[in-house]
Length: 267
Image (cartoon, rainbow, N blue to C red; front, side):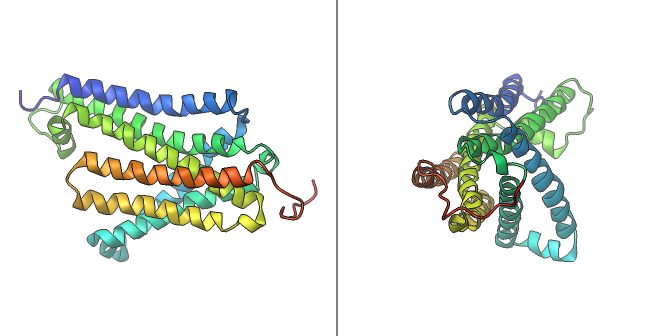
């Protein structure tokens, strides 16, 4: 019986997977109905995450980390944290900026679209991380409990057996913080794309994103308490949200003036 994944753990995994679906759906409905945001930015956010984070960044990470240089990077948690953080920051924030300057250029008149884009970008990541991963774990757990795996227990399955059921819910807390950060970063990059004088908000978003990921990687290696780690991540995300709110308050109401606006090509 010691090699059985507790039924409550499987239930918690299912709850987490449902949150992975609910987060993007709820955000889409809220920003659409309460803020009057357009639909397109949401799906562009999803597409940018897939292209820039999963495909391009993922491919480069695989190539670099599987090289001789990658072995050096992987051997030092600080190097790995800086590398992982900067790759995520550069690719995801560049993806945002590119989307705002190109396919969403005509949608920049409605600042609520920055929020909708963030909901798509961060929401799809939540679906990808919470939904897909938890469904995979549920299948593995059910196979283990049904005896499909025989007497062999993989490290992943052993982790599912040993993890207290309530711990799975911390993944939801972490995703709430991550999605909040993605929306905040989208606001920063949005106004960088709208106003040439605010371009500095784009590299700021890159640095904040890099720091967000790097801190999480480093602390995970030095802090044994998962709860404490998640609290730190939540606080960091909250500070980024406050910064984005200040930028929004300063820029959204006044809008983009003719003097500040970058020249756009004629249509």
